[in-house]
Image (tube, rainbow, N blue to C red):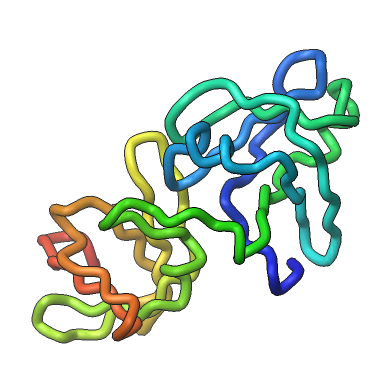
Length: 169
């Protein structure tokens, strides 16, 4: 991905017969996408910019219609691509919400100070995000909910979690 672009969602599949795309994210996309008239679709080193025709739905999963993507075959081409925007155009998120790119790479530690590993990916799920963490225990999936996530400190580069029974096993 171009260094000045930030992924804000992922295209999961085409939708309908007019070239619409289903997009999922870690935050309320419809309100967020209202700030943008153009979006980038990116995958590996490829990237294309499109004008936004409309967005429908709400929450973390929306249907997106882009100009010049007008049929199922055109939409299918973008399956599993990321939706991105220039970093300098990102609106601020409410307190306690973070963009996925801000979390990837942060060190995860328990309340007792034990290192768990680093966040490799933020997986958007229907109910809440899940942090994919890789460390000395291998891969651990941590639900991004207040019962587990005690603190996120971007300045210190760490996420403090409450290690409940079975979470890290």
